[in-house]
Length: 368
Ligand code: C2E
Ligand code: CA
Ligand code: CA
Image (cartoon, rainbow, N blue to C red; front, side, top):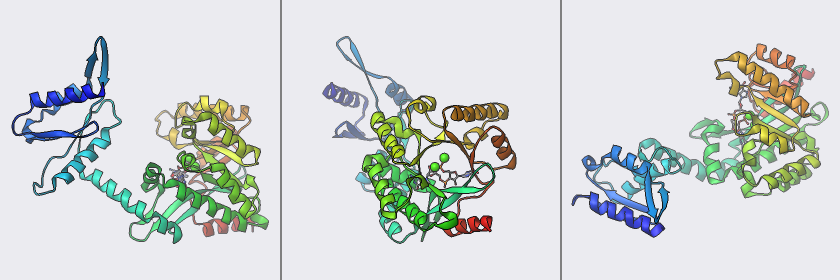
């Protein structure tokens, strides 16, 4: 069937091209075409690609076709570079079902260059501690700080102070997130090991990317860290999102169970913002639900948002889980949540993420 699809595309090209076109099969299922801009009837192509069917006897096969286009503005440019750019445009629509054609633009190229640049620098950034965890306080019903979430920051010598959204997606794509996360987990353990006396009961929550599970034995890695630093497992809380459960469900459940059996506290991050959360909740071994205020704040209907919050909090209580609301920005939100039975809070209303030193100072001033 694959061969006949290629033959069909080839004969379609032969029949519809003029002598001005240059075209051929580049390899695999890739074709390259160079043609005068005016010859490309994109509307017609998009229509054709949206239902490309090949028949095999009475059976119809739908073929998903995509096209990446680079419009030549610098004719002296190397042809292979032009194809690279068309290929980049193609990559941007490759997984789409409703859109089949994409044009190259400089943003795509800039993103690729950015990805390459920061990926090449990550090892050095870890070595030189340009990358480090910030801590955002987590408070209880009485407003007491009981712990913190470790959030990564990159103090880049040229690009300035980088927030995670500028580099985490890149490293989740290429797998380097595993190195960053290992470093942040280690840093969190190092910090915990220095917290004695009045800070001996504080915990740190660490973020685990779903991609981490593909590159290492997450449990073994974290367990060896707490042994090395001689830390109570309950002081290192494990934050996972429900996307962790999208593949190898049984295996992932077993890993979470091992964490809990060894005394770690397992938290579900961003609850309610992803897929099939309620179904996951039934099977996932958990201690804490982290509910994000942000997913409710975009809704204009605050009454409905309140009903959802109230019921999620009730649900977590009924399931025997603690509820932590993050993204708490105002006193009104804090009061409302407290009345609804939420026990843990995190958000700008209490404090923004801060350096470890700042966090320690805040804790000391509270005690004094
Ligand atoms: P997250 O795990 O949901 O972390 C909470 C995010 O909400 C943080 O953003 C925090 O700064 C922000 N936030 C806290 N309180 C408020 C508030 O009151 N209002 C608003 N609008 N935002 C608030 P941040 O630090 O930019 O981190 C973004 C995301 O990057 C995190 O979301 C997490 O998914 C990821 N991330 C951060 N550090 C790490 C890390 O070390 N490893 C991995 N794998 N992911 C990380
Ligand atoms: Ca988190
Ligand atoms: Ca979150």
